[in-house]
Length: 291
Image (cartoon, rainbow, N blue to C red):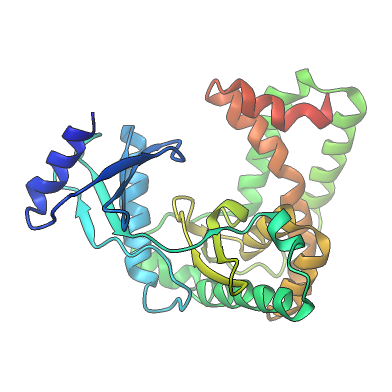
């Protein structure tokens, strides 16, 4: 199986000598390989993933000069034939391991924890400095309306998830969504470029130095509400660390209400993903607190 992938890489990059290649099991939508222990290659498995990888590659190339934290730099690219197996990108492996909540809790020195918060907040300040207007102009990204997206999400939840939920959970969700959608939370909303999946698995750190070593997986990146990225932090690490990060973000407390609301939808989004993609495990994980 790996031979096809090797052939496809070498047909474009004949000077890259591949000494070893092994699959990295993480990718849901991509076949991911580590080449020569130093390069990451991603091959989309499905047609839909091809457009996503193309967009992700354009975004990564575009933000390279703005972001000071290490991010994937797709130096190897193949978008000539848009077929699964033929399309790929490759970048230098970014050192580090995911900053899981347990790892963060294991950091006992407050100054080091504050340092991590500062690095994450700085990354988001840089990324969110790219306004919606600029990104639409330069990257031809689709315009997104977070209010509309949440309204559509609410409809899907009612239609697809309510039948599996207990009554009081349904009422709680309805009240939460209706209060939010009819409230003032969206009145000071600036659309920017966002990471879109800013959680523990995509935040790499070096446990030796207790510093962030890189941010990966920009597959969900695009235009959106900056509060959405902070919801990833809140969901991954809890209230205390989130407060440290949001305090370091300009006018951060103005977006806190939206952050908390988005976080409250994550499990429901996972359950929906499960239903829509026939993934029983995701459905059960997302719905368990509402049954």
